[in-house]
Image (cartoon, rainbow, N blue to C red):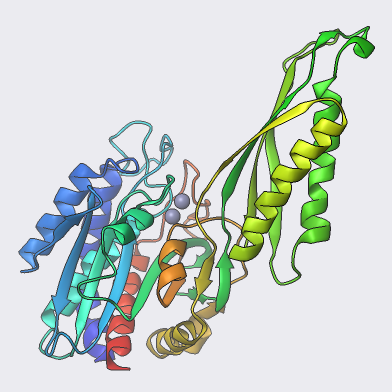
Length: 393
Ligand SMILES: [Zn+2]
Ligand SMILES: [Zn+2]
């Protein structure tokens, strides 16, 4: 079976690249993936599948082998692009100015279409069902994954496992990265407004200086991460935007502090957010100011199911060769695949796309991001192989 899949992946590699280039040329922002959805649906229908729309611009399709109810495995691709002006000079450059597939979601979508191509040709040779999940809006809260789950993507039929892959520009093409257990962070946004009483910079005693209060607050809040976090959860609290719009001789009325709190433990996440709120309010009050705290919930933390991940890693090693499997570090960025990982056995692994010789080294979310397109043949073939291996477990 492994050789059959490799042979099909090679045979259709040019089609995978053409699909990826079509998507790359025509990127759409989160929750606006109308043309992308149409394109993917057409491709799936051509293969004899019956895609269903979900979460407005998402799609789900079932690819049934023999005895389809035996087991179900779900494979996920995200389809949205980013508000970035592409700086690459390539034939498949974005024609939608200011919008770019700079996170490789074009590769994920084209790879999953590739899986559909490969497994349709093999459907008499496996048992069970592969659920193809094309979701919208990974890059934007509340995350397309949360909407897909709410609309029943994990029901009728219920998959026993969920697998997602993501490009990795730091990993050479031909290599695959895995990590068991905690992998990516929860991401919540913190908006603090410290309200004092402004006035002349020469007479601070007549008011309440919110700049000084905010300075204390920024320092004090770090104790939550350094003194309160459980030892088993990496945590980050960063404030990247501090606005005190006074002048050298003007104390402003208020200071705005915006930041992000990230961790890898849902209980601690709640506790940490509660502590941030309490400390901000209490400290400001003790200094005669007030604090307005607004927390915008992001994605949960991403947990790679240990047993499933161990199996997939071994299966990937069989397909790729053990020398091409790398261990991933935890990564404090967020990813809405985490929503699936909170409710079903899930594994999110990384597909190497780097090629230093060809200068393909830019990180995701940059205007010069690109991939070595050989990764498409690997991505589609490997995912097909992993799905069939899992159906056979
Ligand atoms: Zn991204
Ligand atoms: Zn992404």
